[in-house]
Image 1 (cartoon, one colour):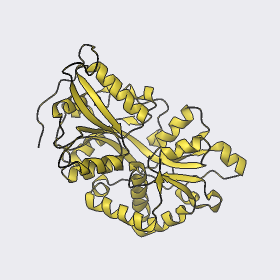
Image 2: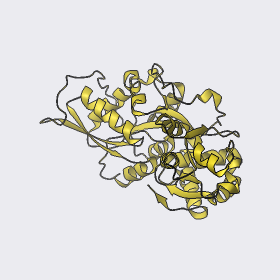
Image 3: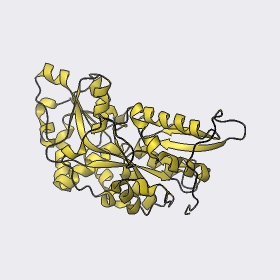
Image 4: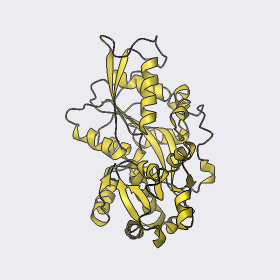
Length: 341
């Protein structure tokens, strides 16, 4: 299936959402729930003839749901979350080829994501991987600030680290793929086995580790840097670190689901959310990623990626079905871990 129609992106008169005869949109959102709710509220305000049914799922969970429903799709559009599972969904034929009329407004990295997928997904934001640690806990326990990936293996950090499970979390899969690209696959798994001794918990959600650190339930969370910054902005004693050896990054993506029940409404949302005026609203919901529209303004709190040593992350390879499945299978076999919320 290929969508070729162009949807209007202008807002409509304000009327109550879900009015009699209103159309619907079934949305999976893989960003922070506050951001998801902000998008739904603003979309229903702009398009009052469309009511949104939204469910928040981590990237891996979203991919699994869409794949499980392939014979009878229930979802129309998947917004946010790391790009690798979006690319896998594209490779598996689970999403729709579509080129938005707003594609020319986007940064090159967002367009490159679309081109890599055969225009079955597109970049909506970007952010680098790192960690956030609780400065009060580290000071109280006399722990040294970890500036590099190697520092996370310090035995003094036993039980202090949380990270997510890469099966459910796009953040954690990005970490896994990053380490493989930095070190080589065997070396990366040797590193992860050593790191496992310091990991107290593998969570389902990618941002949960740093939220736990903010609450004092962990010393450090391996997360995207913007999620750590969000905790600092909220007043928690979290310091954000970019690994000295280099780090990967995400291109948060958006995809239209093949065979979704409301394709026209999905296209309306797709084009609307790529607009600069919409992306400018995201910092109000605590979004500190870099927006994909070139005219949108990032939050003043957003990490400066120009100061981060980024690897040349291979989205095509690590977003491919075979590579992703193989890495996750090896993680399950050699690392494991029980993921919790």
